[in-house]
Image 1 (spheres, one colour):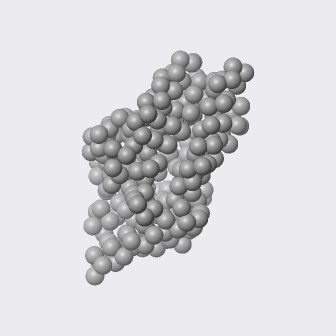
Image 2 (cartoon, rainbow, N blue to C red):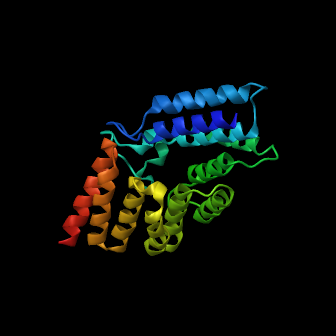
Image 3 (cartoon, helix red, strand yellow):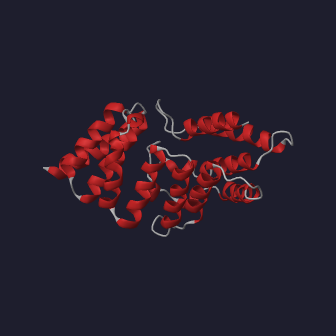
Length: 235
């Protein structure tokens, strides 16, 4: 069952942020992963609180799908999303599933990730998000199942609390992680923090590095726009 959960988790993630192609989101993959997960938790033989937490995670993320791109399909960062476009029904069902997942004795990574997703969903804005809670949940995730991806996301959350310099201090060591060697989002995140610090030359270099590894067309468009912005600011 744990292996099935992991497959569905990966399937949903590929739909949520496609690794290649001309569309950043593949909603059909998200929908199918959630449907299969719903079947698992609805069957007494395969029900588990971890499955409920995974379904909660999927629903809370799916609630934000429509707001993650603009009318032209271009990627929108969290701070630029219109939260009125978030699906309130999916958020409510995701929260209900998260509450159901808390009835067991086991806390899985899905519980903690769903808790992070709920923290975003309940916040009226990026500024009003409970970032200390998000950092705490990432600390728990890292203690449970250390991952450079968790550390990357934790660093971004730290940046929301302490500023971009603090985020950079946490992000730069991740460039040495072998598993992130060809992971463009680490250089994209570093470039974004360097841009926010006003170091446009360093940011441009980081965005160029990110572009060499990025295969998704919509993400490349976003990175190219950031690169152009930094090159112009550095002149």
